[in-house]
Structure formats: structure tokens, C-alpha cells
Picture: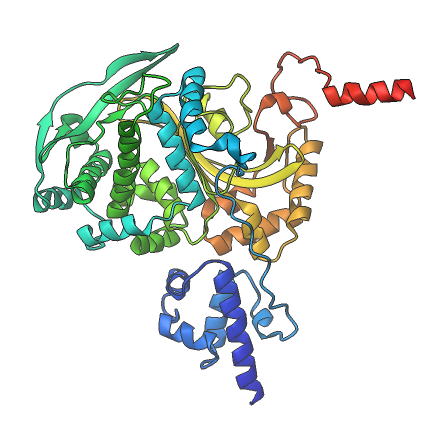
Length: 519
């Protein structure tokens, strides 16, 4: 084998290794090349031949590939460079698992008796509990539901981007009639919280959709509601069991269910909750087919503002990022004042800043989503690098948040983010050193601090490989220490002046003290 052939095979192996560790398809790489330099961008078939050593890229194409993966062209030709694939990060979706031991206490009969009691004592409705179970399913699967994707693509023929007229024609095709009603948002009070509720749309068996006239002025929300009702018709043949689409209220709170009957849980609770999720996911997949949306996000560097080009709500744009991105470690929050999370997704296992069934009394105010929630004049999006101190663990995240209004006029904050550690590991960085350096800088600054030069370079380089523009931008600003609860704030000076709690002696400590005293 000639030296040139050997270098081609070696270069191809390194390219394939880089592509796979970043979760990219050959089509993804080709699209990125077109985005950077369309005139010399290689085709998918040509990239395949580079991988197998059948072609040697020209210096221009090699430079293009090197820029995508933030390597120098010489790295691809250096036979001494490390080819080893880094250890694959463990799945980080959702909360850590709870072992059901001893098994006899977690039998089906005992759980059937204990769960209603748990719901009753915590003020949780059966509908809300069902939503929590579905959210756990989403997180474990990291928002991958290929059957729903295929169903939506079969109906919409992967048309991208769909207009309101396209969706109205689809309604006719699947046998749905659309009728319009006119109803304003109404003032609602839940405990001490006052907000507005707007009934946007609902399904009436056997085949009629009722749509609020106010959605005519909001095509992004109109498109989502139409797509969700189409999903109900396609997936369930419009059997009538479908939630009203209403803005306002807590997770799982809809006008037609037993959401207020705490402690009660029946099959209808689970059915409605599952269909809420199923039809919502179908709607997003119909409006944003996976491959076209993935290429769009790459072109737009995952800018949430690009939603205007597609007439999508920011919530749909953010949620769809978590499902179509080749990178799997995402989180998403939809927060309402004074501190409720109406929607949550944690494919990266990030601890919750506060609960979504009740507001905690000591949320960490340094979370971007929380601080923006209490800044009425915060109109510009904000990107933030955060070191999350959770006990002995130091975690590293980047999020992008902004304040907006829902269709009823209520202010809320949407935030989407990623776990940076798996991405940094994929690029070969020593993540412990990166996180420790950023943590030390933030502690020296009293809770906020500039990123050290090497850490900033690592994050910016990784952000470019991911092609997520707001990651590189966030690295230019100060990083912040955050924590799950202010009561355990790790900052040198606590960010919330909370009453100090007297330390309660643990039984084990008392026992050890007795042993020391006696001996």
C-alpha cells in the first residue's frame, strides 16, 4: 500500500471516529459543509468514500472538515494522533433510579394502595401524577419516539414548513370540520395565584374542531392546535377523548378532567395525559419533520429567534430541538410566576430548580429561568454558563432563556439548555479540570466569575462543533454558581438571606459521641 493510500485510510478512520462520537450522519456533515462553503462542499457519497479511504480530500475540503470539528488539517494527517473513542457517557436522562427494595414492599398491591395516599397527602391530582410518569418516559428515551415521528411524516409528506392553509387542507383530508368561536381570556385564581385562562380550541366528536377566533391573529399557535387535533384524528380516529387546549393553569390542569380531585386516580387520568403528550409530539413532528428541521437548526445555529421564519411558537421550537438534535443531553423549562414549572424536560438529568406541582420556598435565584421570571423588563434573550453544585457533584450547563407571553397574556419564561460535560468529553477535553477551573473562578468572584481562558476556548470550540451559537456566546460572559435549593447555597456569601436552620443531630452522630465519651 502506498503512503498516500495509507494516509487516506487513516484520515478516513479519524473522520469517521469524529463524526460518530458527535452523533452526526454523513448528511449532517454535508449540510454543515454547505452552510460554510457551498461551492466546495462534498456530497454525502463523496464523504462516504473519504471515510472508506477510497478518496483523499483536497486541501480545501480537508480545511472545511477540520473547521467543522475544530481540528487543524494536520491533525487528520498525523498518524500519531490518538484515534481512541472516549468513554461513552452514561445515559443522563431524568432522575436517578430508585431501587424497589425490599421487593415485598413494592408489590403491585401495596403500590396501588400507597399511591392514592401519596397523592392525597401531597395535593397531587391523578392527572398530574400521570404527566410525571410520562415525563419520566420522555427523559429515559431522551425524547425519541420514532413511531410518532413516522405517523406525522406519513400524513404531512415531510412538507416543511407548513402554513395554516396547508393544515386546513389536511383537516379536510382526514375528515375534520373547523368551526370558530369567540371567547376572551378569563381571570382565574388558584390558591393565591391569579392568572388568565384562555380556551384556545377543543375537539367535539365525531369530527369537529372548535377554534378560538383569537388564534387567527396568532398563526404559530393556530398551527400547533390544528396539528394536534389532526394527530388525535389520525392516531385515535377521533374517538372523542381529547383534552381542551387551554392556556393557563398548572401542569395537568384542564377544564374537563378530575384534576382537582386530589388522591383520586383512574384510567381516564392516564388516558388524557398520554393523549396530551402523544398528540402534542405528533403536532411538533408534523410541523417540523425530523430531517428537514435538523438541517434548518444547523443552518440557523439553533437560534430560537429563527422560529419566525417558520411561524412556530418558541415553545415548539425549543422542544423540537431536544428531539431532532444529534446531541442528546438537553433540558427544557417553561416557568410561570411566582415559581411554577408548567412544562419540564430533562434528557440530561439536570436537578429541578423547584417543583412543578407546588412552588418551593427556597428556589435558587441564580438560575437563568428564575432570575428572568422576576425581571419584568428583561426583553432580550440571555445565555448563561452555570456550574451546578449538587452535594459533592459539580455539573456544567449552558442555557438560553427569554421572557414572553402566552396566548392569554400571562408572562412566562422559556429556557432550553444542554449538559456541556458529554460534549466536552467527546472532544477529548479533561472535563474535571474544565469544571473545577470554572468553579474556582466563580467562587473567587463571590458566585460569578469570568471563564478561565482555557475553559472558555474549550467551550467555544465545543459549541462550534455542536453548531449551537448561544453556547459560544455564553462563554464570553461570566459564569454563575447555581444549586437546586438556596438552603444549600455553595456561594461564599449566600445569594438569599434565609433564616438559619438549627442543625439537628443525627442519631449516628449521637451514637459516635457516646462511644467517644465512654471510651
